[in-house]
Length: 258
Picture 1 (cartoon, rainbow, N blue to C red):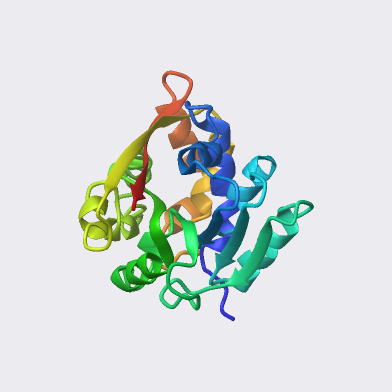
Picture 2 (picture 1 turned 90 degrees about the horizontal axis):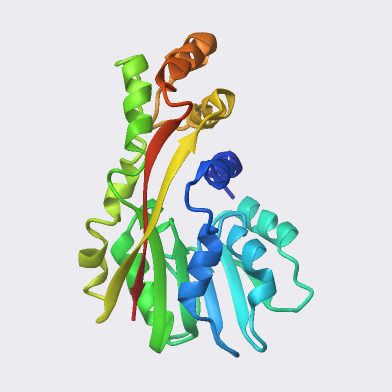
């Protein structure tokens, strides 16, 4: 199976957000709180990545609940299985393509898609499948970012060299804070959006440089001038830390749909 092109860069990006976010509430525990999981709930996560959601909430699964952790990437699924303790027997793991979920109608009480819908080739097909396997009265939880998410980071990189190609949030335009309600509305009757208030204050130049380098193998980006001139780029970043840090907008939200 072909590896997900995002999987090798996922952990450095999670580390950046964990270390420098101004909102110290853990993103994954915040999501879990909003999911309001009950005894005996059957939960599906699609596009679960490396399983961080359940690493952070393993101790909070109520009695009788079950979680099917899924991803289209075999490598990601193996990471999830190695990272998530299953001592309580709450978890199952399965390769699932959200465009064709091989479960009967009304199979799950809750379904989660965490920052993954905009990666789908066909979002409408994915939402048709999700709404089909969701029980009547069940809830779908999906997170995404706004169009201004990390906007200052893009501006910094392109100020260093205008020839750099660094779309950053181009892919999330397919499903973002600004258009998410409209995209969900053909499939769900009750939709609400909750914003996670946050920002980044980054005071470590080497860490920020390493984070930006995670985009070098992404074919939608071209950061060759940064790769070829790391010292020059670090000096440029240092010149921008007038207050001792660089502040970057974070714009994240969750849609809750039923």
